[in-house]
Image (cartoon, rainbow, N blue to C red; front, side):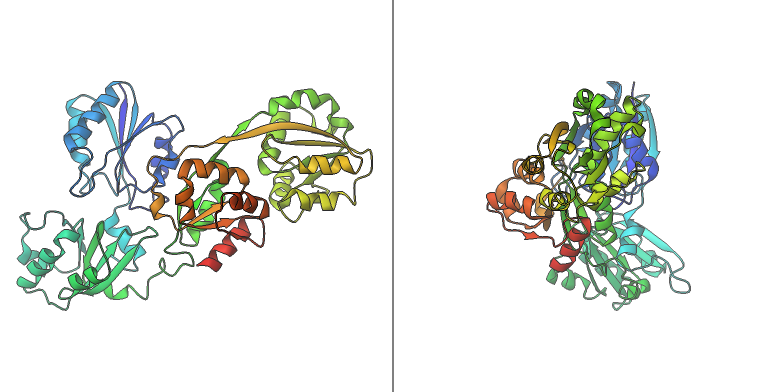
Length: 486
Protein backbone atom coordinates (compact mmCIF):
# COMPACT_ATOMS: atom_id res chain seq x y z
CA UNK A 1 0.00 0.00 0.00
CA UNK A 2 1.13 3.50 -0.76
CA UNK A 3 0.27 6.78 0.89
CA UNK A 4 -1.60 9.91 -0.24
CA UNK A 5 -0.69 13.51 0.54
CA UNK A 6 -3.53 16.00 0.09
CA UNK A 7 -1.47 19.09 -0.68
CA UNK A 8 -2.62 22.69 -0.73
CA UNK A 9 -0.64 24.53 -3.40
CA UNK A 10 -1.80 28.04 -2.58
CA UNK A 11 -3.57 30.60 -4.79
CA UNK A 12 -1.50 30.53 -7.99
CA UNK A 13 1.90 32.07 -7.27
CA UNK A 14 4.12 28.98 -7.30
CA UNK A 15 6.22 30.33 -4.43
CA UNK A 16 3.21 30.47 -2.10
CA UNK A 17 3.59 26.82 -1.21
CA UNK A 18 4.89 25.45 2.05
CA UNK A 19 8.34 23.99 2.64
CA UNK A 20 6.72 20.74 3.72
CA UNK A 21 4.66 20.53 0.53
CA UNK A 22 7.81 20.90 -1.58
CA UNK A 23 9.63 18.26 0.45
CA UNK A 24 6.80 15.76 0.10
CA UNK A 25 6.25 16.45 -3.60
CA UNK A 26 9.85 15.41 -4.20
CA UNK A 27 9.04 12.05 -2.59
CA UNK A 28 5.92 11.44 -4.69
CA UNK A 29 5.92 8.82 -7.45
CA UNK A 30 2.55 9.98 -8.80
CA UNK A 31 0.89 13.39 -8.77
CA UNK A 32 -2.68 14.48 -9.53
CA UNK A 33 -3.30 18.21 -10.02
CA UNK A 34 -6.18 20.57 -10.75
CA UNK A 35 -6.56 23.57 -13.03
CA UNK A 36 -6.31 25.99 -10.10
CA UNK A 37 -2.90 24.70 -9.00
CA UNK A 38 -0.32 27.21 -10.23
CA UNK A 39 1.51 26.23 -13.41
CA UNK A 40 4.87 26.32 -11.62
CA UNK A 41 3.97 23.75 -8.97
CA UNK A 42 5.13 20.78 -11.04
CA UNK A 43 8.70 22.08 -10.99
CA UNK A 44 8.95 20.59 -7.51
CA UNK A 45 8.23 16.99 -8.55
CA UNK A 46 10.84 14.44 -9.51
CA UNK A 47 11.65 13.86 -13.15
CA UNK A 48 10.30 10.29 -13.13
CA UNK A 49 7.07 11.10 -11.29
CA UNK A 50 3.83 10.11 -13.05
CA UNK A 51 1.64 13.19 -13.61
CA UNK A 52 -2.15 13.19 -14.06
CA UNK A 53 -4.38 16.17 -14.84
CA UNK A 54 -7.80 16.15 -13.14
CA UNK A 55 -9.34 19.14 -14.89
CA UNK A 56 -12.19 20.64 -12.86
CA UNK A 57 -12.87 23.59 -15.16
CA UNK A 58 -16.26 25.27 -14.62
CA UNK A 59 -18.92 23.43 -16.60
CA UNK A 60 -16.37 21.08 -18.17
CA UNK A 61 -14.97 18.61 -15.65
CA UNK A 62 -12.22 16.45 -17.10
CA UNK A 63 -12.88 13.96 -14.31
CA UNK A 64 -15.79 13.72 -11.90
CA UNK A 65 -15.08 13.75 -8.18
CA UNK A 66 -15.92 10.04 -7.94
CA UNK A 67 -13.42 9.32 -10.74
CA UNK A 68 -10.76 11.33 -8.91
CA UNK A 69 -11.45 9.43 -5.68
CA UNK A 70 -11.20 6.11 -7.55
CA UNK A 71 -7.91 7.14 -9.12
CA UNK A 72 -6.42 8.14 -5.75
CA UNK A 73 -7.34 4.74 -4.36
CA UNK A 74 -6.01 2.86 -7.39
CA UNK A 75 -2.65 4.67 -7.38
CA UNK A 76 -2.19 4.25 -3.62
CA UNK A 77 -3.12 0.57 -3.70
CA UNK A 78 -0.58 -0.01 -6.46
CA UNK A 79 2.13 1.23 -4.11
CA UNK A 80 2.53 4.86 -5.23
CA UNK A 81 3.27 7.77 -2.95
CA UNK A 82 0.58 10.07 -4.31
CA UNK A 83 0.56 13.86 -4.21
CA UNK A 84 -2.97 15.20 -4.70
CA UNK A 85 -2.31 18.87 -5.49
CA UNK A 86 -5.23 21.20 -4.88
CA UNK A 87 -5.44 24.97 -5.33
CA UNK A 88 -5.56 26.95 -2.08
CA UNK A 89 -6.14 24.69 0.92
CA UNK A 90 -7.48 21.13 0.53
CA UNK A 91 -10.23 21.63 3.11
CA UNK A 92 -11.51 25.06 2.02
CA UNK A 93 -14.13 24.36 -0.66
CA UNK A 94 -11.69 21.94 -2.23
CA UNK A 95 -13.46 18.62 -1.57
CA UNK A 96 -10.39 17.46 0.28
CA UNK A 97 -12.64 16.13 3.04
CA UNK A 98 -14.46 13.88 0.56
CA UNK A 99 -11.18 12.51 -0.76
CA UNK A 100 -9.84 11.93 2.76
CA UNK A 101 -13.00 10.04 3.79
CA UNK A 102 -12.77 7.78 0.74
CA UNK A 103 -9.15 6.97 1.58
CA UNK A 104 -10.16 6.20 5.15
CA UNK A 105 -12.90 3.85 3.94
CA UNK A 106 -10.31 2.01 1.85
CA UNK A 107 -7.92 1.73 4.80
CA UNK A 108 -5.32 3.89 3.06
CA UNK A 109 -2.88 6.14 4.87
CA UNK A 110 -3.11 9.84 4.09
CA UNK A 111 -1.80 13.15 5.33
CA UNK A 112 -3.09 16.69 4.75
CA UNK A 113 -0.61 19.47 4.04
CA UNK A 114 -2.41 22.81 4.46
CA UNK A 115 -2.11 25.50 1.81
CA UNK A 116 -2.45 29.27 1.81
CA UNK A 117 -6.09 29.99 1.05
CA UNK A 118 -6.92 32.31 -1.83
CA UNK A 119 -9.52 33.91 0.44
CA UNK A 120 -6.79 35.85 2.22
CA UNK A 121 -3.78 35.78 -0.12
CA UNK A 122 -5.52 37.12 -3.22
CA UNK A 123 -6.86 40.05 -1.23
CA UNK A 124 -3.33 40.69 0.05
CA UNK A 125 -1.98 40.82 -3.52
CA UNK A 126 -4.82 43.17 -4.47
CA UNK A 127 -3.93 45.65 -1.72
CA UNK A 128 -6.92 44.74 0.46
CA UNK A 129 -6.32 43.76 4.11
CA UNK A 130 -8.82 41.12 5.21
CA UNK A 131 -9.20 42.75 8.63
CA UNK A 132 -8.40 46.23 9.89
CA UNK A 133 -8.66 47.67 13.40
CA UNK A 134 -11.98 49.42 14.09
CA UNK A 135 -13.14 48.79 10.51
CA UNK A 136 -13.28 45.01 10.02
CA UNK A 137 -12.75 42.93 13.15
CA UNK A 138 -13.64 39.68 11.44
CA UNK A 139 -14.08 38.10 8.05
CA UNK A 140 -16.46 35.52 6.65
CA UNK A 141 -15.77 33.19 3.74
CA UNK A 142 -18.53 31.66 1.61
CA UNK A 143 -18.65 29.53 -1.49
CA UNK A 144 -20.21 31.57 -4.25
CA UNK A 145 -20.34 28.71 -6.70
CA UNK A 146 -23.92 27.75 -5.86
CA UNK A 147 -25.01 30.95 -4.15
CA UNK A 148 -28.48 30.81 -5.73
CA UNK A 149 -29.15 27.36 -4.30
CA UNK A 150 -27.32 27.34 -0.97
CA UNK A 151 -29.27 27.84 2.18
CA UNK A 152 -27.53 31.10 3.05
CA UNK A 153 -29.25 33.30 5.59
CA UNK A 154 -28.85 36.46 3.55
CA UNK A 155 -30.47 38.61 6.23
CA UNK A 156 -27.84 37.55 8.75
CA UNK A 157 -25.00 37.82 6.24
CA UNK A 158 -26.01 41.36 5.27
CA UNK A 159 -25.84 42.48 8.91
CA UNK A 160 -22.94 40.40 10.23
CA UNK A 161 -20.33 43.12 9.63
CA UNK A 162 -16.65 42.70 8.85
CA UNK A 163 -15.37 41.54 5.47
CA UNK A 164 -17.43 39.22 3.27
CA UNK A 165 -15.50 36.98 0.87
CA UNK A 166 -17.08 34.80 -1.81
CA UNK A 167 -14.94 32.21 -3.58
CA UNK A 168 -15.73 30.81 -7.03
CA UNK A 169 -18.71 33.16 -7.27
CA UNK A 170 -18.31 35.18 -10.44
CA UNK A 171 -21.19 33.50 -12.27
CA UNK A 172 -23.39 34.32 -9.28
CA UNK A 173 -22.19 37.90 -8.79
CA UNK A 174 -25.63 39.27 -9.68
CA UNK A 175 -27.33 36.95 -7.18
CA UNK A 176 -24.89 37.79 -4.39
CA UNK A 177 -25.23 41.56 -4.83
CA UNK A 178 -29.02 41.41 -5.25
CA UNK A 179 -29.58 39.24 -2.16
CA UNK A 180 -27.46 41.52 0.02
CA UNK A 181 -29.17 44.67 -1.23
CA UNK A 182 -32.63 43.07 -0.76
CA UNK A 183 -31.66 42.40 2.84
CA UNK A 184 -30.84 46.05 3.53
CA UNK A 185 -27.10 46.16 2.92
CA UNK A 186 -26.24 49.64 1.66
CA UNK A 187 -26.07 49.67 -2.15
CA UNK A 188 -22.96 51.88 -1.84
CA UNK A 189 -21.02 49.29 0.20
CA UNK A 190 -17.50 48.92 -1.18
CA UNK A 191 -16.98 45.85 -3.36
CA UNK A 192 -14.14 44.43 -5.46
CA UNK A 193 -13.75 41.50 -7.84
CA UNK A 194 -10.24 40.07 -8.29
CA UNK A 195 -9.52 37.77 -11.23
CA UNK A 196 -6.65 35.26 -11.28
CA UNK A 197 -5.11 36.74 -8.16
CA UNK A 198 -1.37 36.41 -7.40
CA UNK A 199 -0.58 35.71 -11.08
CA UNK A 200 0.56 37.90 -13.96
CA UNK A 201 -3.04 37.98 -15.20
CA UNK A 202 -4.35 39.44 -11.94
CA UNK A 203 -7.00 42.03 -12.64
CA UNK A 204 -9.34 43.78 -10.26
CA UNK A 205 -12.32 46.09 -10.49
CA UNK A 206 -13.47 48.19 -7.57
CA UNK A 207 -16.92 49.65 -7.08
CA UNK A 208 -19.94 49.09 -4.88
CA UNK A 209 -22.78 46.60 -4.62
CA UNK A 210 -24.84 48.62 -7.06
CA UNK A 211 -22.36 48.86 -9.92
CA UNK A 212 -19.77 46.11 -9.47
CA UNK A 213 -21.48 43.70 -11.89
CA UNK A 214 -21.54 46.30 -14.67
CA UNK A 215 -17.89 47.27 -14.02
CA UNK A 216 -16.78 43.63 -14.08
CA UNK A 217 -18.44 43.02 -17.43
CA UNK A 218 -17.03 46.22 -18.94
CA UNK A 219 -13.50 45.25 -17.85
CA UNK A 220 -13.54 41.71 -19.20
CA UNK A 221 -13.49 39.95 -15.84
CA UNK A 222 -14.11 36.21 -15.86
CA UNK A 223 -13.48 33.14 -13.69
CA UNK A 224 -11.62 32.33 -11.52
CA UNK A 225 -12.48 35.28 -9.30
CA UNK A 226 -12.83 36.29 -5.68
CA UNK A 227 -15.52 38.75 -4.57
CA UNK A 228 -14.82 40.88 -1.51
CA UNK A 229 -17.35 43.17 0.14
CA UNK A 230 -16.65 45.61 2.94
CA UNK A 231 -15.01 48.83 3.98
CA UNK A 232 -11.48 47.34 3.72
CA UNK A 233 -11.79 47.52 -0.08
CA UNK A 234 -11.10 51.27 0.14
CA UNK A 235 -7.43 50.53 0.94
CA UNK A 236 -6.83 48.83 -2.44
CA UNK A 237 -4.93 51.79 -3.97
CA UNK A 238 -2.78 52.79 -1.00
CA UNK A 239 -1.73 49.22 -0.17
CA UNK A 240 -1.34 48.01 -3.76
CA UNK A 241 2.24 46.69 -3.48
CA UNK A 242 2.00 43.85 -6.02
CA UNK A 243 0.55 45.63 -9.02
CA UNK A 244 3.15 48.41 -8.62
CA UNK A 245 6.10 46.08 -9.17
CA UNK A 246 8.11 46.83 -12.35
CA UNK A 247 7.27 43.59 -14.18
CA UNK A 248 3.73 43.09 -12.89
CA UNK A 249 1.37 41.81 -15.55
CA UNK A 250 4.08 40.01 -17.49
CA UNK A 251 4.36 36.26 -17.85
CA UNK A 252 7.95 35.55 -18.80
CA UNK A 253 9.09 32.20 -20.13
CA UNK A 254 12.63 31.10 -19.30
CA UNK A 255 14.08 28.18 -21.22
CA UNK A 256 17.29 27.34 -19.36
CA UNK A 257 18.27 24.02 -17.81
CA UNK A 258 16.67 23.49 -14.40
CA UNK A 259 19.82 24.14 -12.30
CA UNK A 260 20.43 27.48 -14.05
CA UNK A 261 16.78 28.59 -14.08
CA UNK A 262 16.36 29.05 -10.33
CA UNK A 263 18.25 32.32 -9.85
CA UNK A 264 16.64 34.05 -12.84
CA UNK A 265 13.20 32.76 -11.87
CA UNK A 266 13.52 34.19 -8.36
CA UNK A 267 14.77 37.56 -9.60
CA UNK A 268 11.88 37.83 -12.06
CA UNK A 269 9.41 36.88 -9.34
CA UNK A 270 10.80 39.58 -7.05
CA UNK A 271 10.16 42.11 -9.83
CA UNK A 272 6.51 41.06 -10.03
CA UNK A 273 6.57 38.78 -13.06
CA UNK A 274 4.94 35.39 -13.27
CA UNK A 275 7.47 32.88 -14.57
CA UNK A 276 6.74 30.03 -16.93
CA UNK A 277 9.66 27.63 -16.79
CA UNK A 278 10.37 25.33 -19.70
CA UNK A 279 13.64 23.45 -19.18
CA UNK A 280 14.35 23.07 -22.88
CA UNK A 281 17.79 21.60 -22.25
CA UNK A 282 19.03 18.87 -19.96
CA UNK A 283 22.68 18.76 -18.91
CA UNK A 284 24.14 15.26 -19.10
CA UNK A 285 27.55 14.74 -17.59
CA UNK A 286 30.26 13.11 -19.70
CA UNK A 287 33.07 14.15 -17.40
CA UNK A 288 34.38 10.59 -17.35
CA UNK A 289 36.19 11.73 -20.52
CA UNK A 290 38.56 13.59 -18.19
CA UNK A 291 40.18 10.29 -17.17
CA UNK A 292 42.62 10.27 -20.07
CA UNK A 293 43.82 13.79 -19.26
CA UNK A 294 44.34 13.42 -15.50
CA UNK A 295 48.03 12.57 -15.77
CA UNK A 296 48.57 15.66 -17.96
CA UNK A 297 46.70 18.19 -15.82
CA UNK A 298 49.87 19.34 -14.05
CA UNK A 299 51.54 20.07 -17.42
CA UNK A 300 49.11 22.67 -18.76
CA UNK A 301 49.81 26.40 -18.73
CA UNK A 302 46.13 27.38 -18.90
CA UNK A 303 42.83 25.68 -18.17
CA UNK A 304 39.95 27.43 -19.93
CA UNK A 305 36.38 26.99 -18.69
CA UNK A 306 33.57 28.26 -20.87
CA UNK A 307 30.40 27.91 -18.74
CA UNK A 308 29.12 27.38 -15.23
CA UNK A 309 28.17 23.84 -16.22
CA UNK A 310 31.71 23.27 -17.45
CA UNK A 311 33.15 24.41 -14.11
CA UNK A 312 30.88 22.05 -12.19
CA UNK A 313 31.62 19.09 -14.47
CA UNK A 314 35.38 19.64 -14.22
CA UNK A 315 35.66 20.05 -10.46
CA UNK A 316 33.03 17.43 -9.60
CA UNK A 317 35.11 14.84 -11.43
CA UNK A 318 38.28 15.87 -9.62
CA UNK A 319 36.45 15.52 -6.31
CA UNK A 320 35.04 12.12 -7.29
CA UNK A 321 38.54 10.71 -7.88
CA UNK A 322 40.04 12.58 -4.88
CA UNK A 323 42.43 14.51 -7.08
CA UNK A 324 44.71 16.90 -5.19
CA UNK A 325 44.11 20.24 -6.90
CA UNK A 326 47.49 21.52 -5.73
CA UNK A 327 49.01 19.46 -8.53
CA UNK A 328 47.52 21.89 -11.06
CA UNK A 329 50.01 24.64 -11.91
CA UNK A 330 47.95 26.20 -14.71
CA UNK A 331 46.33 29.60 -14.71
CA UNK A 332 42.55 29.60 -15.18
CA UNK A 333 40.56 31.54 -17.77
CA UNK A 334 36.78 32.02 -17.81
CA UNK A 335 34.15 33.13 -20.29
CA UNK A 336 32.08 35.79 -18.56
CA UNK A 337 31.74 36.87 -14.92
CA UNK A 338 29.31 34.07 -13.99
CA UNK A 339 31.82 31.40 -15.04
CA UNK A 340 34.57 33.29 -13.22
CA UNK A 341 32.50 33.45 -10.04
CA UNK A 342 31.83 29.72 -10.21
CA UNK A 343 35.59 29.05 -10.42
CA UNK A 344 36.22 31.34 -7.44
CA UNK A 345 33.85 29.19 -5.35
CA UNK A 346 36.60 26.56 -5.64
CA UNK A 347 39.16 28.92 -4.10
CA UNK A 348 40.74 29.83 -7.45
CA UNK A 349 40.86 33.32 -8.91
CA UNK A 350 40.94 33.18 -12.73
CA UNK A 351 43.79 35.11 -14.29
CA UNK A 352 41.63 36.00 -17.30
CA UNK A 353 37.87 36.62 -17.33
CA UNK A 354 36.11 38.04 -20.34
CA UNK A 355 33.54 40.75 -19.84
CA UNK A 356 31.08 39.13 -22.23
CA UNK A 357 29.78 35.58 -22.34
CA UNK A 358 31.09 34.85 -25.84
CA UNK A 359 34.21 32.98 -26.98
CA UNK A 360 35.35 35.91 -29.13
CA UNK A 361 35.51 38.15 -26.07
CA UNK A 362 37.65 35.66 -24.14
CA UNK A 363 40.00 35.12 -27.07
CA UNK A 364 40.58 38.86 -27.39
CA UNK A 365 41.79 38.87 -23.77
CA UNK A 366 43.79 35.67 -24.02
CA UNK A 367 45.73 36.43 -27.19
CA UNK A 368 47.66 39.25 -25.52
CA UNK A 369 48.54 37.05 -22.52
CA UNK A 370 49.27 33.55 -23.79
CA UNK A 371 52.47 32.63 -25.60
CA UNK A 372 53.14 30.48 -28.62
CA UNK A 373 53.46 26.79 -27.67
CA UNK A 374 51.53 27.30 -24.39
CA UNK A 375 49.68 24.14 -23.45
CA UNK A 376 45.98 24.83 -22.99
CA UNK A 377 43.29 22.50 -21.69
CA UNK A 378 39.72 23.22 -22.79
CA UNK A 379 37.05 21.05 -21.10
CA UNK A 380 33.69 22.00 -22.62
CA UNK A 381 30.30 20.93 -23.91
CA UNK A 382 30.19 18.71 -26.95
CA UNK A 383 27.49 21.06 -28.30
CA UNK A 384 29.48 24.29 -28.06
CA UNK A 385 31.22 26.04 -30.94
CA UNK A 386 34.83 25.05 -31.77
CA UNK A 387 35.78 28.71 -32.29
CA UNK A 388 37.96 29.20 -29.20
CA UNK A 389 40.06 26.05 -29.69
CA UNK A 390 40.63 26.89 -33.36
CA UNK A 391 41.53 30.51 -32.62
CA UNK A 392 44.10 29.50 -29.97
CA UNK A 393 45.64 26.90 -32.29
CA UNK A 394 45.92 29.55 -35.01
CA UNK A 395 48.22 31.64 -32.78
CA UNK A 396 50.46 28.64 -32.04
CA UNK A 397 49.01 27.26 -28.80
CA UNK A 398 48.78 23.52 -28.16
CA UNK A 399 45.15 22.82 -27.28
CA UNK A 400 43.57 19.70 -25.81
CA UNK A 401 39.77 19.59 -25.84
CA UNK A 402 37.66 17.34 -23.65
CA UNK A 403 33.87 17.03 -23.76
CA UNK A 404 32.76 17.01 -20.12
CA UNK A 405 29.03 17.38 -20.66
CA UNK A 406 26.43 17.42 -23.38
CA UNK A 407 23.14 19.20 -23.85
CA UNK A 408 20.06 17.18 -24.79
CA UNK A 409 16.39 17.95 -25.39
CA UNK A 410 14.27 18.68 -22.32
CA UNK A 411 10.58 18.00 -21.84
CA UNK A 412 7.52 20.23 -22.16
CA UNK A 413 5.78 20.36 -18.75
CA UNK A 414 2.26 18.94 -18.80
CA UNK A 415 0.54 21.99 -17.30
CA UNK A 416 2.21 24.78 -19.27
CA UNK A 417 -0.04 27.07 -21.27
CA UNK A 418 2.16 28.97 -23.72
CA UNK A 419 -0.80 31.22 -24.60
CA UNK A 420 -0.37 32.96 -21.22
CA UNK A 421 3.28 33.85 -21.95
CA UNK A 422 4.16 37.43 -23.00
CA UNK A 423 7.96 37.24 -23.41
CA UNK A 424 10.35 34.34 -24.03
CA UNK A 425 14.00 34.60 -22.95
CA UNK A 426 16.71 32.57 -24.70
CA UNK A 427 20.19 32.19 -23.21
CA UNK A 428 21.96 29.91 -25.72
CA UNK A 429 21.60 28.50 -29.22
CA UNK A 430 20.58 25.15 -27.70
CA UNK A 431 17.65 26.72 -25.84
CA UNK A 432 16.43 28.18 -29.14
CA UNK A 433 16.69 24.95 -31.14
CA UNK A 434 15.12 22.84 -28.42
CA UNK A 435 12.32 25.32 -27.70
CA UNK A 436 11.35 25.30 -31.35
CA UNK A 437 10.89 21.53 -31.02
CA UNK A 438 9.03 21.74 -27.70
CA UNK A 439 6.92 24.87 -28.13
CA UNK A 440 6.64 25.18 -31.90
CA UNK A 441 8.07 27.84 -34.18
CA UNK A 442 4.80 29.64 -34.85
CA UNK A 443 3.99 29.88 -31.14
CA UNK A 444 7.41 31.47 -30.46
CA UNK A 445 6.99 33.96 -33.30
CA UNK A 446 3.80 35.28 -31.68
CA UNK A 447 5.71 36.33 -28.56
CA UNK A 448 8.24 39.04 -27.75
CA UNK A 449 11.67 37.40 -27.70
CA UNK A 450 14.87 38.36 -25.87
CA UNK A 451 18.30 37.01 -26.77
CA UNK A 452 21.02 37.11 -24.14
CA UNK A 453 23.65 37.88 -26.78
CA UNK A 454 24.58 37.88 -30.49
CA UNK A 455 25.47 34.17 -30.75
CA UNK A 456 22.01 33.16 -29.52
CA UNK A 457 20.63 35.90 -31.76
CA UNK A 458 22.14 34.29 -34.84
CA UNK A 459 20.25 31.09 -34.11
CA UNK A 460 17.01 33.03 -33.63
CA UNK A 461 17.63 34.80 -36.92
CA UNK A 462 18.13 31.46 -38.68
CA UNK A 463 14.55 30.59 -37.68
CA UNK A 464 13.33 34.02 -38.82
CA UNK A 465 12.31 34.94 -35.25
CA UNK A 466 12.22 38.65 -34.38
CA UNK A 467 14.17 39.44 -31.21
CA UNK A 468 15.98 42.06 -29.19
CA UNK A 469 19.48 41.57 -27.78
CA UNK A 470 20.67 42.45 -24.29
CA UNK A 471 23.38 45.08 -23.95
CA UNK A 472 25.03 42.98 -21.23
CA UNK A 473 25.27 39.26 -21.99
CA UNK A 474 24.23 38.06 -18.55
CA UNK A 475 21.27 37.86 -16.16
CA UNK A 476 21.52 41.57 -15.29
CA UNK A 477 21.32 42.34 -19.00
CA UNK A 478 18.18 40.23 -19.30
CA UNK A 479 16.53 42.03 -16.39
CA UNK A 480 17.44 45.44 -17.80
CA UNK A 481 15.98 44.55 -21.20
CA UNK A 482 12.78 43.22 -19.66
CA UNK A 483 12.26 46.46 -17.72
CA UNK A 484 12.88 48.37 -20.93
CA UNK A 485 10.29 46.34 -22.85
CA UNK A 486 7.78 46.77 -20.05
